[in-house]
Image (cartoon, rainbow, N blue to C red; front, top):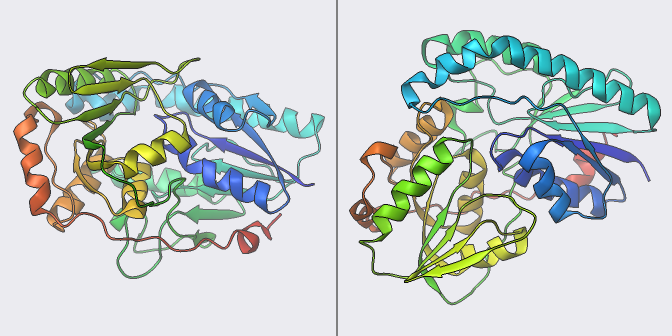
Length: 347
């Protein structure tokens, strides 16, 4: 069997979770996927695929701003460290390729994980990288790295109604881009509604904890049944019931799929992986974008403007705002059948 490295960026859980259907697609088509990442992204995929070989890559070890207004400048200050880590992961991948016989690479937003010796794929929904008045620079820099790969897979449709908007649809398209359709590990299933509200958290600290504390305080005024998934990947799953709220530290894909289908409304970040999951499941939700993350703020505004999902800023959220959900149409099914065999012909 041909061995393919699958390497998601460790930035929240989204990059890792959207690699799950890719890994499963590789397995179903006779390939041997090998996981390469770090931190919670690596831990999540090891839990999902405990029998697969895995490698640990250098961590970007990004420090995130407490205040959203400082997010961009905090990232700019750390740019030399990010570039240094890209070089380190490039060296690590080269050493892995020298030691083992691999036939291809699929990198989800890890800019240094490619090789001139084997076919290399980059996955991103951000061909335009929004950073305010510096978007032209970050997009140009991103494009430079993308062109080092044989192909760039965008998890969206190319034409018509799409999920990524201007993020994945630049005015000037890069030559190696393929639109493969939205990626989701979840499936819509007919199940009785068990929870009125599902809270799903993820993303970088300290913002994940800040939002968790705010929502917990607001839920004291919410009388309906709630399931709360904190998005904290630990060795063992924990379940705590407090009044009408059931808390989990994390769920695996099967548990998460069931809980999504059993929940009436979803309260979550507006990360692109979550957007793809909601679209696949035809769910109604409320978005609270991570403060300072231009991508999430753009997506939240886009879907609010289109009458699909309501949103508000983190500091302005109150539980009463969930009443808006019923006045929005929610997602319809944007899913497109992914032709894995054709995609994997590259290898």
